Length: 243
Image (cartoon, rainbow, N blue to C red):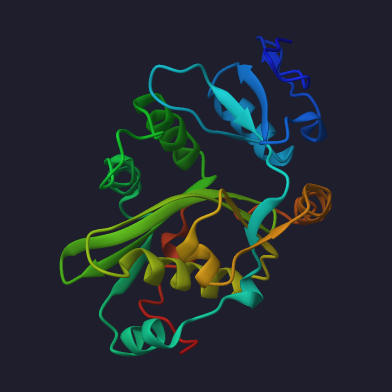
């Protein structure tokens, strides 16, 4: 392990496929550095309550924040303005139809943002997870235009949200609402949002202690994983019903 000024150690990963316990992360959440983005290591990270997050030119950094920012499917909150918009049915939705396009769109720099944490290596790693049936995308379409979407990883009854993008106002929020409705139907218990954002908080996401998160995660992982292409499973419904 390595350490700097912080009294809490940051662990250095090597070829061995393991992680230190998530509870040993620094107060800000960083736990370890190094390793790789192989499917095996990524899946081990998610099942351990850990995720990668780093910028171009940095080594791979692994995080487990405390508290953890999550959403429970049954707690989704639709502000009145978003509910009115969705009732007009401006988007149709698909799943796993354009995964590579969604992750590439999420990687595009945002206004007032110098770069992106979704590096080329990260994109390749999650495309591999998608090919293996663990990573999934939701697409929001306005006519034939890909207006927005999101992607993440699914294990057990847990969905680990990675990133969202919009080319039209509220398209990513609409994609999230479609996903949450689908996850509800299939009794998913937890959506890991990882890092706080104001728009997810408006939709009902909240902080919980890491100990609570890990307990819920381990319970959710007892469920079988819905592995494979979600296009047939979730994509048959083109609109949101819970309005």
